[in-house]
Image (cartoon, rainbow, N blue to C red; front, side, top):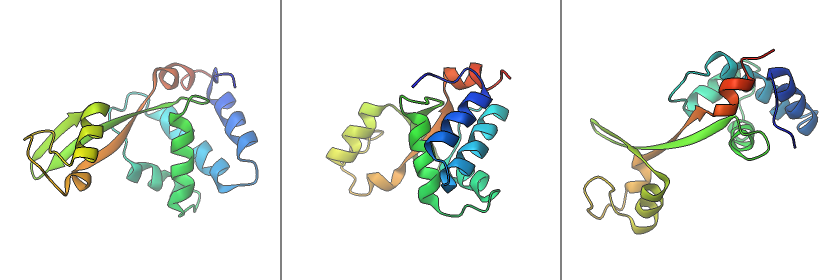
Length: 138
């Protein structure tokens, strides 16, 4: 699939792929949201859920489907990031730290065993370089 050269092209790709499904409506809204927030450095799933609710889409699976697609190779408009949050500590993590923490149950900050580490690591999103160029062009 070709990368979109503007927001309309991104809408077309999503519309064709998800025709007749709520993902098409949610996808269009999320692309519009990204176009308005290309300078964002931290977008949460909660923000995407709120955007989808504008189209009366309450099924979180619909949003997860779109966000997963937007982080993939076909329409790479989002990059993922991870952070460790516990009390007042907020620490960015790279993918290797997340992988090690989840599989070894080791706190990436302290190095101690932590059976609850999975509940302290959160994913967030950032507009990709493609989003920062293509979505501002019409």
